[in-house]
Amino acid sequence: MVSPLTALVVMGVSGCGKSSVGAAIVKHSGGRLIEGDVFHPEANIKKMSAGIPLNDDDRAGWLTRLGEELNDCLNDGERAVLTCSALKRAYRDKLRAAVPDLGFVFLELSREEAAERVSHRPGHFMPASLIDSQFATLQSPTGEDRTLTVDATDTIDDLALQVDRWLVEHGAPTRV
View (cartoon, rainbow, N blue to C red):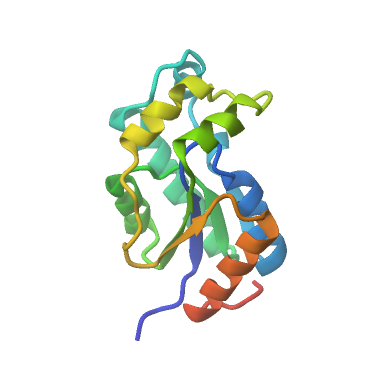
């Protein structure tokens, strides 16, 4: 028997709605929201703010830290809901190594819609100029084990309900 999902990563390119959907999942299904962007080191934020895409080395320590945050949450007896781009399979595998019973919710969005959303997002360090690099880096997780792909243009409430049904199908308690 497959073990139930104990934590989630809400993932996708910049502008897909990770923070909004993560918050809605927590409100609807329970858990603790972990905003992945909060854990970027200052050097990463400066690089992105300057319009320079992050590379694998830039993300390595950040992903390690996110794995630690997931485990801290689980050790406190809560379901973790992490927002993180997790664009490459290697990044997702690193998170899976930290938390084996991890599920991924992929907010799929077109390049045009992502650019439109990011261009209207005030006060965020990720400029719209980096959208192309996000799509160039993205290795779609569709078809990976314990991954739900959803249309990021659905309403936030609909997305939270889709995730809740998926959690139940995977043996996770509806509220933690």
